Amino acid sequence: MVSRWYSWLLVFLCCFTAFPLQAEIYKWTDEKGRVHFGDKPVAQHTAEPVELSKMNTMTAVDIPENLFDRSATTPSQSIKTTLPRLSKGRVVMYSTQNCGYCGLAKDYMKRNGIAYQEKDINRSASAKQEFVRYGGRGVPLLLIGTASGTKKLAGFNEASFKAVYSN
Image (cartoon, rainbow, N blue to C red; front, side):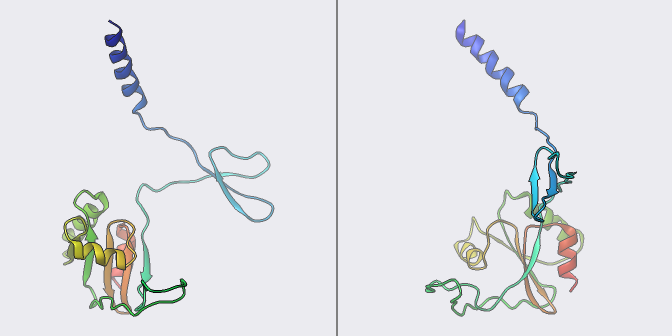
């Protein structure tokens, strides 16, 4: 009888604790000009609610020729690493099968007729090595050939991709 009671309690807890929690995030600046964030507004400061985006952000970064050096003794030292020189409009995407943002990127490129080369870092050891060498921390990692050279994009959202791809 006791085990049945615990089973119902477990079902009850699972059902009512599975709902997502929502909270406001506030932003304010102190007297010294430092920006703070918190879940409660601070009385002595004018705090404003922060609107959070549901999409992750994506930043464009120039890839230098000598990105990493495995023999460096200080962070400023580097070794010559040959990185891909992508022609304008060429896209290489490092991804995984179960990545939602990778799926968004693929769908976007298919809808817009953008050819891309996909490299799954879970299925290919060489793709994983390239991903690490290019500073990948999460997928998708996109390399895009532009008129000014290769750009590296971490993450995906349409606006940022368009801005980099059209250059």
